[in-house]
Image (cartoon, rainbow, N blue to C red; front, side):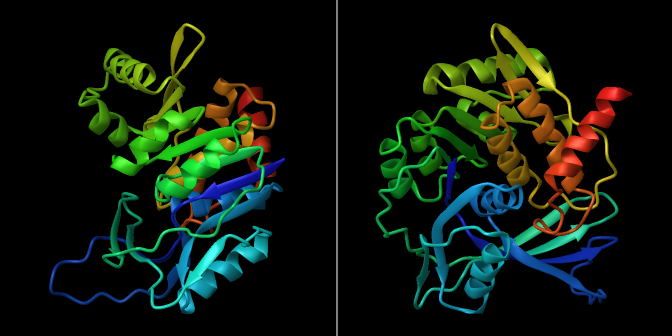
Length: 300
């Protein structure tokens, strides 16, 4: 199968601390973690790490960090034919303070006021397409050109371009924040509130809805039954990229013969395990580790 992930690519620089710095003070750390980032970008990296034939389409600057992103993709075999390198544009940077005590993360992003969009025409046929909403025009063209593909959107935050792409996918896999902001309905911790949110999304977009709930797992509808599918409990140290990794895992499992419930369980597991290490890409578990951990849980 041929996979395409299209959307945001950036570079992450993470500082791990044991408490959040006080304003107007200095704090020294012994090292920092740096690697590529971005929802579709991280998903492409995971899919290739797990043996998929995957291409990434997006935009980076013709600079040091852009070259690092491209080289990093190549180390795991991601096809970068449609990774556009743009002159006079600074690759987006994210500076992340990861608090290892409570696994919170604070992110500062350096991004130009005007971000160039994908311009390389991509008329290839793909079996699976994952979009994150950052490249609305190009994503829509590719989705419409691949009507038979399995189509998934990572709807992380409520933005017009993300909403506009939701009707064109088979699976709307969205964060709790996107779901609440779009529907204007509050998740109050009850299943009843999740059902109302789910039904609003399903009625508007007519696709399979999965709502991610961070450490609580995810919520979806299977047949006529609504299901809260729990995650495993872990002592997280850094949650950076966990959502991206969930979406990459979801894309893998739903296209490798797993049903929706098992796909959600395995994606929860993958995201949870990724929080045990610092740095989005350095925390990605192997496919073998996920299957072994799942089998261990089944046998308990």
